[in-house]
Amino acid sequence: MACAQEARETAEAVARRSYGKLIAFLAARTGDVAGAEDALSDAFAAALVDWPARGIPDNAEAWLIAVARRKTIDALRRRRSGEGAVEELRMMAEELAAAAASDIPDQRLALMFACAHPAIDPGIRAPLILQTVLGFDAATIASAFLISPATMGQRLVRAKNKIRQAAIPFRVPERAELRDRLDAVLAAIYAAFAEGWSDPAGTEVRRRNLAEEGIWLGRLVASLLPDEPEALGLLALMLHAEARRGARRNAHGEYVPLADQDPALWDTPLIEEAEALLFRASAMGAIGRYQLEAAVQSAHVVRRRTGRSDWAAIERLYDALSAITGSPVVAINRAIAVAETHGPAAGLAALDKVADDGRLAEYQPYWAARAGLLARADDVAAADAAYQRAIGLESDPAVRRFLQQRREQLRARS
Amino acid sequence: MKYLLLIYSNEANMLSRPKSAVEEVHAAYGAYTEAMTNAGVIVGGERLRPTASASTVRVADGKTKVLDGPYAETKEQLGGYYMIDVPDLDAAISWAARCPGASHGTIEVRPVWPM
Image (cartoon, rainbow over all chains, first blue to last red; front, side, top):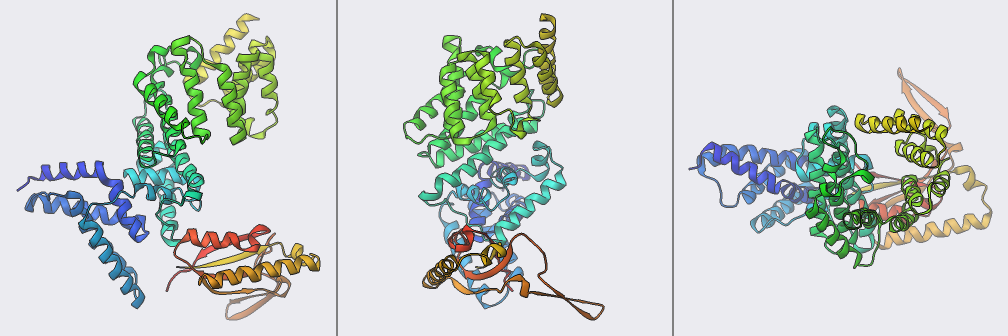
């Protein structure tokens, strides 16, 4: 006989360990994510009643799946009618019973591919993966993504309806399609990570957790697709970024740019893990944006040994990234590298090439980069104006203070 | 699972094409329809006459109101459809992508609501 607390602790442990696995297993058979969530939540509720009375089953996951399966079939029976539906239900019941009897297969990857399907709105893919694979509730995801809980809830419901009604398949795509489709899964994971990483002070626990969950998902995908270099590249990139989290603020909570960070504050085990992943990925001979971005981080990290980032390598890596992505953000970073290798005038010339891209008019890093290069080229008036634009566009108070200090130093110089 | 593939394209461009180009498109649609028939996925499909021949009907206060022209004036017009029966959305999308109309217009893929 188990006490209620023991039952609850076991249920919580199973939820932490296997939530996404159970949802993936149930949803892959019915095509219905919301239905799987409802059935599993009913099964957990039933466990809290049943386990204290009859004891905790040896295989708690199988017990939960069996209960959730009955709930699923009841729900389907209520929704559908007609002879074809009866036959379909019978087959589904048999298949579920057969699968639950043995080990539960891990279909979390298939679930992630469904959540990041091209027919799903890109903006909702990361929240959807966080909810279905990790069991986050809509309110937590909403606060992490700075969206109202009602809006986030509606968008998640709409996405799950789309998966069910349009019959988006739960499967890992064929080889020919895998790379393209994997990009969407990796982009969603990176979006979750980036939301968490963008709280550098680490004051918001929910957002910080999101960075950890992003890394957890990255590890999951890298372990399920160990031969996909971009999956390894993304994990390496996230680990490199995570390794520098603590160094981004000084003891007074002020912003410290990468160039001024103390390498002794970087997390060595994370960096070494990232380097090993990147090495493994590069041996597979299929370069991609995440490997290149991770390699840029790697070229910064050489500062631990040499005291200086490998700017020539960084410039080459941004050249390659630019060719792949055509992104103006990459062009800005490339211009900064060019300034290090060929001087500020060359950097400014590189920056001018993207200056008329309308997307940059309201992009803080463009103006901050421009201001820094103009200051180094001794064009004080233009640098001052660029700092003014950058300060006006920044939302993080610590970064804003940093930019203001830079402008004060510039004014004191003239 | 049944899906309706709605073929939208710029009608004016289509109508002003030279005869040889029209014949080429017809031949492509013939081959496409044949491929769907061979794969056993086609349920039905028709080409529609241009929107100039369309009438719009509404009943309000018990009165039937008929207007000349299509329901909505848009840049691309509905020119035809196929109904297919395939396992999932990926299969439906791959058939939609093979439709000759997909390379000069847009195919909307809509799952059928089973009754």
